[in-house]
Length: 407
Image 1 (tube, rainbow, N blue to C red):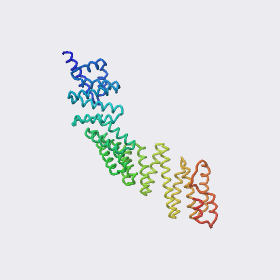
Image 2: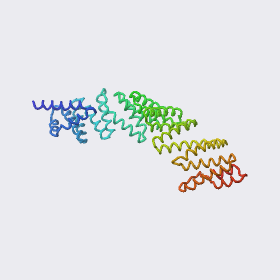
Image 3: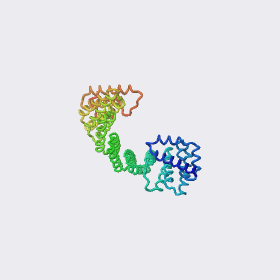
Image 4: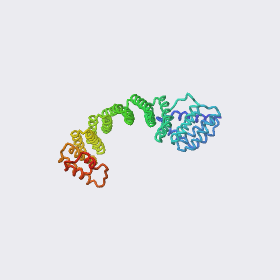
């Protein structure tokens, strides 16, 4: 009798110690406790008739600590069975929770959720824990990546519910970002916007500027992609300001690049030019050649577009100004030969239109040199400079003839 009482108190001690360690903060203590449980103790505990369900729960934990997952699962399932037979409600709930954690650890999230839900069914007032949220997070993310957006929304909504109960604002933030992206992909823009605003609220409560920037960035991308350019500008300006305050120049430069693109869509060309120039300045400071090339291409292409618009309106003097600006941009290293050729040929045609054949011929010949030196590049828009030059020498040549042969 004394032996049975001693075994019972030993088992109770183990369980109470393990329950006290059942948080991430005390994981090291739990590992030490698990390591002390020998195979001999496993056997002696299981043989104890006083609390077989508790014994199996303890053995399952020990197996789990040793990464013997199949054995752990069997022990937990048996613990559920015996606890149910003996009416040991708390042990049954605990076994389900441990099964949920184990399945989470081995990335079997559907099984994890099934067991966590069984624990809640057995104890409706059960307080949640951080580990219970994890499988919902992963399933939300996995469904999002797989394109199953409705499934993603389902799981992320569950994350919001559980994480809000636990006061886990960082997890709430992540869930709302995931929800916003899922709603965006199915075209529910208003719902996406609402989710990003809620993510921003969570970030504000955390006083986390980088998370605030992330929320603004996601919102700005959605606005831009759905042609809500004024709203996109507001969000990108916030991204730029936060990046500036944090001293993160690369992120600030990327925000400026997107502001340039967005202002270009709004036909606010002066603002677009200003932000593209800022990106070029940042790229030089950061010695980022790739960023410099992108900004140069965007700025130069904008100049070409403006020049082309002036040509269409027969405003050739203004077209020449824009082409010259484009030329100045594309002549810098690294040289963009395709766009440089377009700027040169555009200048040639514009000067022809205002009657300056000498400058027209000069620019067209320069364009021809770039065309012929880039023999490995095929450009269907390349000008037939030879035919154009021939017509430029003919005072009777019409504009339509030049355009047909040269553009």
